[in-house]
Image (cartoon, rainbow, N blue to C red; front, side):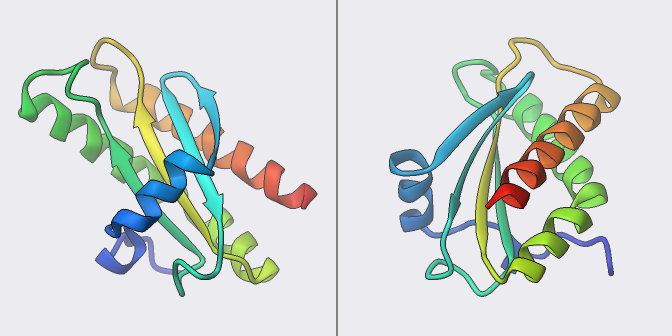
Amino acid sequence: MKLTLHKDKRIKQKRIFDALFQSGQSKLVYPIRFNWVESSKFTKQPVKVAFVVPKRLFKKAVVRNQLKRKMKEAYRLHQTELIQLCSKQKQSLAVLFIYQAKKKMAYKDIEKALQKTIQKLISIHELD
């Protein structure tokens, strides 16, 4: 499996974002909060993702973009297990990763946290 994060694997539709905030479930693995919603009506992809760094925490767009890039890269490298599980269970998942820390963190810390979030998502969906 190629480790890529194409446009078709990213959330872009407003209705998916609305569903994530209104009816989605949420957990926190510091410094990343993740919301997810399960539904096959949203997408043909097994997993669609989006990454958010709040403007109220980081005023400069440069810093927000750096943190989003770090989260995207960490997800890209560790996505295969989650995608395989969703494909095997024939369900689709939309996940929103939100950066919660008040200061910039190193890539290694963000990667560890994202790995934990992915493992937590996997453990939640294996129970279903």
